[in-house]
Image (cartoon, rainbow, N blue to C red; front, side, top):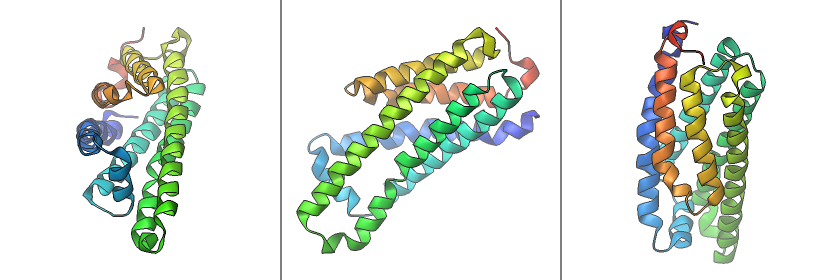
Amino acid sequence: MTKQDYFLPGIAALLLAVLFPSYWLYAFSIGTENFMAVYRADLLSLSLSDLVFVLIGVLEVYIYLCLRRSFAERLSSGSAAVLLLIMALLVTLFHATVLIDITLSIIGSGLTDQTIETISEFTIIGALGVLFAYGLVGFILSIVLLLNRTGAPSLLKYFAVVLMVCCLLQFTVILSPLNVFVFPVGLLILAFYFVKPAQQLELV
């Protein structure tokens, strides 16, 4: 594939590196005092933030699928491509929670407070479960990329280190908000990886 084939994924990675921290910093800022109350109110309405949430998911899935394609061309390991596909599916599941927002914004007025509360709790538990699975798969991917036998370029190994840090932070739960700043670093590395010609990627 040529440099032009990965120009759009590179732009997508740059865009996501901006949108991701912007969205989550905003989300954290309005949900610090009473998270459940804010989250419940968000489920019952649709706003611009929901659109941004969906856009973030679409961009992330697109980046992973393009990265998977590049792995098929540049790496000697097929396991990395499989792990990326799983990560893309998990991201899709996580961002598909917006469907609950859409549903509740339509029928929420006819539901009892207890029902809405239960739906909110199950949604949070499900989302946390998906994030844990994402962290586990991402951690395994980072190890695979760091193995010399994959033939991964040095840029991908830098990304693998950042991804590993993100996953470890995700596992702690308490420190996971730091990923607002760490994950964009990995995206910037991927952006450079996408736009840099394959023949110029240093093999280590």
